[in-house]
Each structure stands twice: as structure tokens, then as C-alpha cells.
Image 1 (tube, helix red, strand yellow):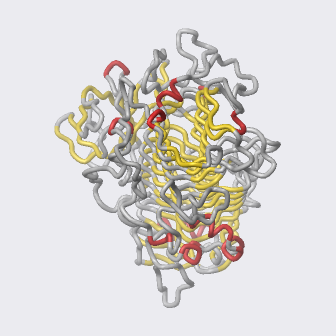
Image 2 (image 1 turned 120 degrees about the horizontal axis):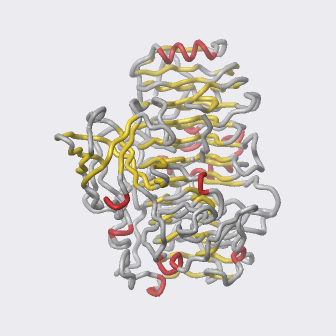
Length: 620
């Protein structure tokens, strides 16, 4: 079976509960946002103290796998030292694989393990169900309104309380200035469909039913069943679920749940070909934290068909495929409500790649040293597959943010308090801090700090006017770089004026104007749908998903980036940005060479005390 894979992540400790009033209220209209406070693990990642097994460096991969298989609701602890492993590791539900710290417990792989059709270093997988061959499916006959928590299904056979459902429906065919517009058609094979994809439409994930692709998805948990009516959490995110699009439901028989990998290093240098360093698939409430990963083939972490998982405090360095199109840090491929937070990406093609992701949070990540060859710059965060929607990108630092048109459309995304400089040494093309290609509609760009002085000389390049490479914003273009289709593309995608007319901008600082812009004309208040009133205040919340400063921020000011920040330590930005903890960790020589999340951040993501070699099995 051959898959076309492109990008996952936290753990749930308490039942999901809607926040009474999301932190974005007063700035963003309810039609343009959701409550992001429940992304990832709600509360803290479980700090397990029951030790099933303590292993030493002479241990084999088979012995580690056996210890995991025989553990329930506990920890398999790997003492400090180097483990030479001739195969990969498989982690099961309700088990934590923990080391003494990424600078002390080092796993060196010379082999791999099979994982849902892939070959990987570490596998965290539920049963083998994917969009090409779902294990279970049924129809969805009623309950489509945004926010709805009760839906009616054609059958509840095989569904129980706790089942993770994947909701989907047919894509849109024709674009009549549709908001939102969900489409992955290249226009080469079906002239009756609007061309919205400049590359390979088959590369965007989702089921195909009766010849129609189904890229719009949301992952939900069943909390109650009454006849064929199912109560779900969270409620529906998108406003366009409709009986006219043949909505349906599918699910894996078994999800891996409540399992994690913590505080160790994974060296894939000599593992041979592998798809991913860590693969998390058909997962719920899983996590990877405090891990240093070196030289996997394609992606350090692949999150696939998963929800409410967390990737936090990790250092992802280089890929065997560096300089190729597919050499990523974290590849998030179909999922909802995940949290990717406080990670470092160094010498990868793209730090975070999203495909068909909804309701997730990407926060306080740092990327540097893009490895794409020549002068073309890859941004920190790339939206690459159809229907990335209603995600939050907050507090990240690096070259930029891009929503490309290669595999289809994107809608309703929020970019808040990031610092994107649009610049990497030696890069002269695609150097735009915020680049929203054709059919990236209804975006919110709030409180960011953008650009590099004496490099960016133009404020915005809209449709097919202006020079994208030296602009702060590029809106509605086709292909990469602006105006160019992918090599060999036969697409008929056109520039899209709705990108610029539906975008919401408020309180962003840029180096071209050398000023913060609170401009009413950049607020789409006159739209017939998804209008955003001009905010009554120029005061922004510190975060759109956190109630208070995280403990792992230490002495770093909170918020670290934004129009209201003064005295920042990044030059050329009028004091509006401080270096986030991930960048400070990266710049600390001892952390860079001997990465340990506990010592880099003071505590491992705010969840527990720093790791140390155990005496008498002293465990965090």
C-alpha cells in the first residue's frame, strides 16, 4: 500500500469544556475564530511515577519493546548512556518511555520498525485505518450548525463513548466567491471544477467517495449516545457543514491513547532509509517532549490522523533529505486540537508543515538555517494541504508564514503575536514574512512584528502587482515564488482578490512603515459574511489561548512580541520583540551541544521539575 503523506500533536487530562468567552473576543468576530484554550493536553501531561522497568545501555531494542509491551499505566525508564539499537521502538497506550534527559539518554538506531505502512525509528500507532481504507464508516444525517455538539448518524454500530470520529464531506466544485472555499482541484482533468490547486491535487489528504475528494475534516470524541444521536466534544468548528455535501463519519477501531516519549535523544544517522523519526498515527492524548532528534529521512515527527496530542520542548536537527522538498521538522497530516509548542528546528526544509488540520495551536516555536538549496527561502510554518482551518499560530519566531496553493485552499486561520523577519542569509526569493497564496481566505493577522530593515522595501504585493520578495505581505498570488506555477504544472489557478479583501489586519508592526498599524481600512468590516467590526480598542490580550504566562518562560517578558511590547532585545524592530525561550535555548552553547529541556527552560514545558539521573529511581 502506498501513501502520499505530508504532516501532528497533546494529551487530555480532564474533560473538554468550552471557555465562557474566548480570549480573542473583542478583537475577532465569533465567525472568524474558535476557543483554542483546549488544544493539546488540557491541564498537564501526566507525570507517571509507577516504574515498570529500568533499563541500562546494554539493553537491546527487543528488550525495550518487551518492557513496553509488559507495562501498563507506567514508565519504562532508560538510564543515562548510549543505546545501540538494531531496530525501532513501538510504544503502546498508557505507557511513558522516559530517559534521563536528551543530553544523557541517547538512542542510536541502525534499523527501523514498521508503523502503519511506514518505516520509522519510534512508532506510536493505533489500529491500521487511513483515508484510503477506513476500518469503519457511516453516514451523518443531521446536526450541521457551527458549534453543534449533537449529530445524528446513519448507524452507531461499532461506536461507543470515547470513540474518536473523523467528520468529513465533499469538497466544493465551483468557486463563486465562496466563503469558505474547500477545494483541491488542479483544473487539469475536470474543466467543470474551479482550478484551485497549482500542484498535485492527489497530494492533499482526505477520503474519496463517488469520485469526490473530501478534504474538510474534524476529529471529535463521542461523549454520549442516545439512539443514533451522538454527543461530541468539541462542537463543530466550520460553518459550512451541509447535507448537500454528503457529510459522513469514519474512524479507527482502536486509537493509541495516553502514551508519551520524554527526555531522550534519537540519533537516526545510521538507520538507513526511513520515512520518519517518530510517527504518531491514529492517536489521541499522546505526547513527545524533551526529545532531541537528529537526521531522520523525511520528518522528525509525523503526526497523522491524530488529535489532542502535544509536541513540546523538542530540538529537531537536520534531515537525511536536507535540501530536498520533503525534509521537515513536524509534519502535521490530518488532525484536530493538537498543540505544537516551544520546539526548535535547525537545518530543516520547513519547521512545521500542515495538511488538513483544524483547531490546533502552534506556539512559541523557533526555526533557523533553512536548508532549501539556492536562494529560495522556506518559511517557519507552511500550510500545504487543503482545508487547514481555524488554527492559531502564536508567538513563533523565524523567517515567515506561508499558505501555499500547491495542494488546495485554506480558510479562517489566525496569526497572532509572531515575529517573522522574512530573511535568511543567502536567500533572495520567497522572502516574504506573510505570504498568502491564491484561495487562502478569511485570515486574521493580529499583533505581529514583521520584516527586516533595509531588506523589505514594499508594504504589500496584492494579486499580480508589486515585488513579493521585498514585501511584508503577499496576497492572492499563484505558485512559488509569486507568480510562478510549480514545475510541470498544468494548473489554471488564477490570482485571487478575495485573499486581500477578506484578511483582517490589526496592530501589526512592520519595518517598511516602521510603525504599528491600527488601520480601520485593513479590517474587513463590510463583508456580507465573516465581517469583522473594527475593534473598539487597540489593547490586545497577551495570548489567544493561555490565561497567564507559562512558568517555562522564566524571566522572558510576557507577552514577548507585539505592538505593546517595549525594550525588546531583537534589534531593528523598535523594541517590539524579545527572543522567545526556544531561541534563547538555541543560542546557549551548552544547550545547543548538550540539549536538555529541563535545564534549557527551567522546567520541561512547565509540567514538571527538570530531569536528572535517578538515584533509587527518583522520577519526575
